[in-house]
Image (spheres, helix red, strand yellow):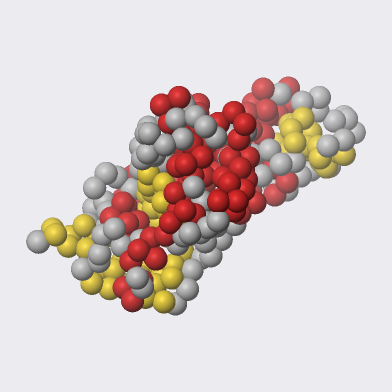
Length: 312
């Protein structure tokens, strides 16, 4: 667990972060979101002490990071940035091996770890291990950056707008890849973004900051979208917040009706589909109802009223 206890960072008379208090639970993805200049990156980099707080304390599993050796602290935390920062004259394998080598792992152990991580991020070692960063696409470089951050198997991963410079299609793929990896690895991840769609899509919880690093709301995405805590939060989420919320809720969680005498609707959706997908199907279907299936089993029928009830 990472705990911020009234953490502030000031530069002269300017407050970048003001008395931030929150807890990041172990194994969760917490997203720091908000407009440019609201202290997201400052808050993130105070965790690994690239920036030192002016006041307050940050602790990891109850231990104040200010009492830790700063080099040991940074090596124990994975760090991924937007521009990746791969060493251009080192191969992919050498880049990924950076922290394990610093930790004095044996050559055999390092080689095994590099191969394991390349497989994990979907880059076959035989095809990618000996390439240079210049020979990779932007999305591939980001995958290598994630693999390098995971080199020594840290419990904590810090990600500072890692997909910000990637085109929208590849960006969604990388978000999916991160969610897939998290199901396997269960890391504690702090992720910075200014994109609210990205925040609610990948975060277990979202911390929404305003100027001066003021915490406006800290909640699960569904709660954030349903109940903004302030006018600032509502404005930042925008008019499409309820549509975004439908994308987070599953069809299986809605109240389903049983088929009536007229039979099943011909259009169907999966039980694990989002309510947003179900609403799209309903709007296209004759009669305004669609069948819900789990593989070959019919679970019931859903309509717009069921979706309205489930999204409250």
